[in-house]
Image (tube, one colour):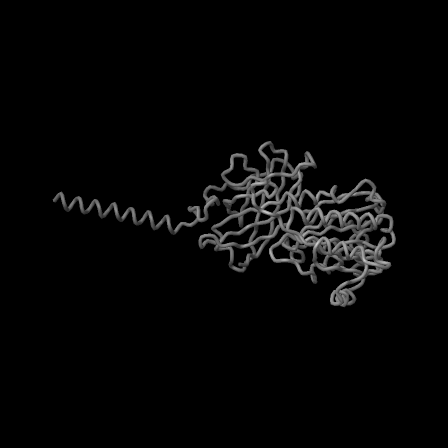
Length: 385
């Protein structure tokens, strides 16, 4: 009788153990599937902001990796400024860190994730970017054209030392055409393009002309708006430049004029606002406006005279305003310098169900422990392996 009871108890114990083990194995969300990445059960809901947001989260790109047979999604973002000290760039801390200041959810479900701040020497990560200069080379830019070209050359050489980066350039003017383009290349080759022999090595001529006949033909057939239109230059680069896959796309638009789409919505800054036209993975746009931003205040009008820095607001970029002579300003002064050097990689797993061909809502919330830095942004992404 004792033996039968012992056998029954052992059977019950084994059944319980097997049931528990099976339940644990089936419940992936309760597991740390990849070393170093917290499980989703350790994640908390995105907090509600106690006040209005006071900084901007930029557009992002994502890559898909496989680690130990498990899928991992990595979100790449450029740096985020501290609105209380513009010389300071935020360091982000994710799930399970005592000073967590960023949260991530997908379709309302909190996700466990880690953050790598690429500025940290021990991160072992080098930020990567494809950077396009969009340059208004109309006559009104003549005062600052040489200074812009000089700074593009010096700045590109400097960025190359610390980043995995390549550079391209698009020129546009009052004729309403894309009148110059140089596809991605090294800083040295971009310098050679801006310093070509002949009439192309001074003033606004620097960003006119083509090295590639194929790009020249594309530009001649791309369209015309009869006025300066940075969005046309932007879209031209997006359509025809050789961007690398899963690398941050960054644009810097230099102009002293409104964006002038000539009443065509496809060339409007509002076109970029629409995520179906300009998904977050298309990149972030930064603005350098070298004119009094209030001088056109009477004329600001959608599809006619548009504020070019709205391209930055819509994509999470930054803006800087200077005078027509680019006085006391270098590209090192641009917030984008810090944004590139202070990038982030956010890694999460338990993501297999996201690759279903449907759009998913990614929500990122930033809230420092003292509540002084606040931001939130939602992205709509269709994940592909």
